[in-house]
Length: 96
Image (tube, rainbow, N blue to C red):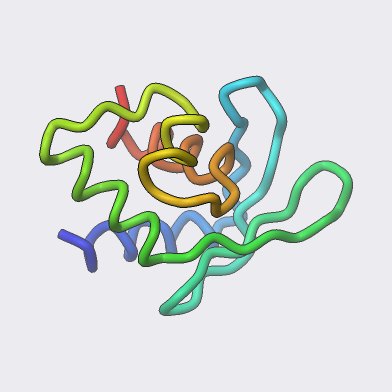
């Protein structure tokens, strides 16, 4: 499961996918290594998201934990760019 998830993330990053946060802030996926995802926000700043934290979120979701927004991601997964992490999981269909 985790490798399939990460393959999806890498494909999105290779295509420079543009996503939006729950509040509508745009950002772009620009690179995905084996350990992190790099995003670029509208100001041009780049931020990285840790792969292990994203995979932890998926495990929690699959066990029935709800992540209804970035605050839940922050509180239950990690303080690791929760708005972008939550938006990615939502875009990929892990969060409904």
